[in-house]
Length: 175
Image 1 (tube, rainbow, N blue to C red):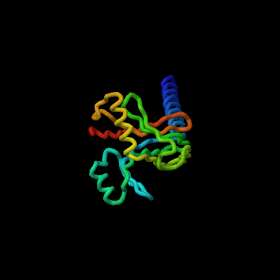
Image 2 (cartoon, helix red, strand yellow):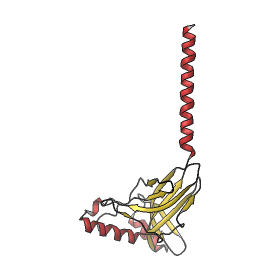
Image 3 (cartoon, one colour):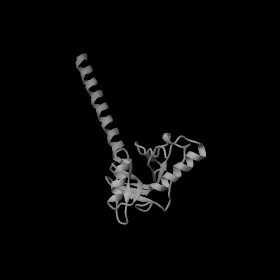
Image 4 (tube, rainbow, N blue to C red):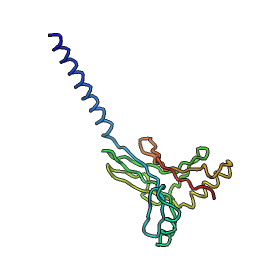
């Protein structure tokens, strides 16, 4: 009789643990979950062509310019992969230069901020790549940083206080 009681108790503990784990998982997945991507590309008067920073070589940018996309840009895309909406309150480009970050309030191409990002929605903001390069050059010269060690990431600031930084970075390299 004790063996049966032990088996039932162990089975009950396993089922309770599985149920609790499932409830915690549902709770974590039920909110807004934002992913951030850093993109590079070019724009013209009416449109923008971008791609992931690791796949856009300088020759690709030259091809875009030849096709009429005359202004190189660096862009941040926010994707809400969660089930609830979230508000994007700011976009910036943090760098590896002494904690410096570039933001262009009112000068970004994209939706006005704050921007409501619905569930399974995305939005993209961009600035001229030339502005970002001037920012990096100023930081390199001010802090005497080796250009080969400089990186830029994309960062999205959310209405709930969270900041989500892109995993991939842009490294312009020397020059």
